[in-house]
Image (cartoon, rainbow, N blue to C red; front, side, top):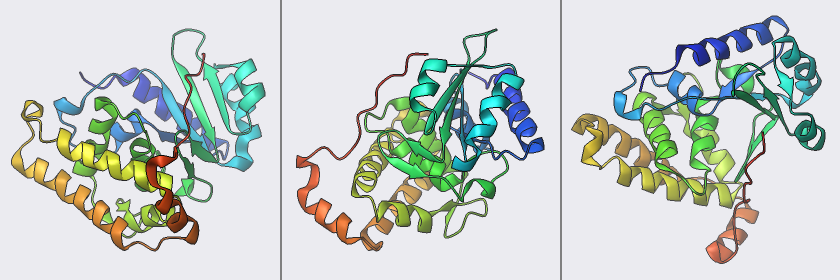
Length: 250
């Protein structure tokens, strides 16, 4: 299934308009993964219905006027209750909605974004984009393939210059045992899924994904771990290590 041009155009329209107003609006989610998967293969393709963004915490007030100006209506009840952390805007002419995370991407685990959104002109940095998918406790095939796509089309490294920054992943996961645990589990799942012959991956592509999975898992072994991480590790999975995410009524 090809990418829908209209939603990609809309993403770029909103990011461009935000840039003109000095708003750091950056894409996250499946569409952001698609943007960062340059030679996209058909077995990774899926529908993209909605738009997901992150903004810095100190720009929250700006989007409250920006999105109505762009033709979107606020989900008033949700925004009233959650607006300091997350806001939702609806397109009155379609079923599309826009989900905005403020300062931090917070679902099963917390991913701080403040001070990092300037690193890419369109999406959140690759490290955070990868973690935003790997932090999903109930990982489905669609999200697993998003992870595989990011690993196939993007190099790993120790900086954010077009690479998945392993040093930053180590920093976040070395402080948060739960994030580390869920990410470890999901990377192993991705390794299993890319072995599915029905994907028609070449051996070279499959090997590259598995190589990058192994790099991250090996990095987890050697990364510095906080005292809180080490104490939580002793408890392990006997106690729930993630937040349960509820569906949001649009």
